[in-house]
Length: 285
Ligand code: R5P
Image 1 (cartoon, rainbow, N blue to C red):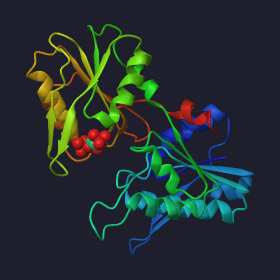
Image 2 (tube, helix red, strand yellow):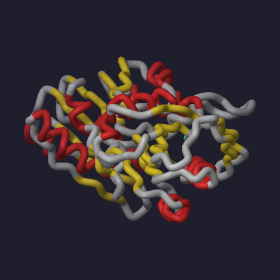
Image 3 (cartoon, rainbow, N blue to C red):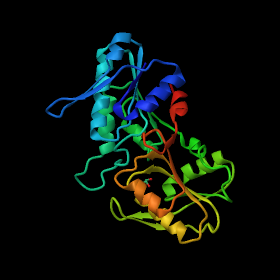
């Protein structure tokens, strides 16, 4: 039985269809004192052997919901709890950046581990975060599907990642598209919203470019990358990512930078989430 957190309701429904498993009735509420209540009365009624909780932890509330749903399905008597974190929040805080800082990804993983027999997550920033979980955690690769919404008529395309860390994603999307060159920019981050991008040597003049990253958060990285491309007589620019977090004014920032389109997956349910990771997840379930 598939159990959805409030942040991943469309993806959970798609996964239920893909697996031909029932989608549990769920309730999300908040008490007058601000405390949350996420419940799964549908699981208590159906008494399935397995519950698959699907919830992107895009906020602290979403994290708490996961813990509550895990507890609720155990209470309902299920034997196996599989927790699917399509987007794992805090995953980028995977080390203590200064003395006295927490390894937040590990803290989150440990808490979720207490209620899960198995964990799946999609294209984490660093696959090593999977080691923070106590049960087996698997990183599911969904980047190949990002080629699907791209136009068929890209002109001599270049698939660029804004930093070396995402070049694998750019190569995966390029391979899935079937033609093109790949390269990456050098990126230096000065603050949460300020990044500096140094162009690569690849000639982008009059060529269509697809910029590929694992996540767009504030949009600073992508808008800087697009700005650099615009100075170099690029053709059309498309941007695509696995996790379209798109915080604050990111969409406006990117639109003003002059992108043709923004594409993302439904690991985070936004208007640009045109690609579903449900088939990729289903193959692990
Ligand atoms: C960092 O290395 C990631 O791959 C992304 O480039 C980054 O997290 C995007 O964040 P923002 O959109 O805030 O620049």
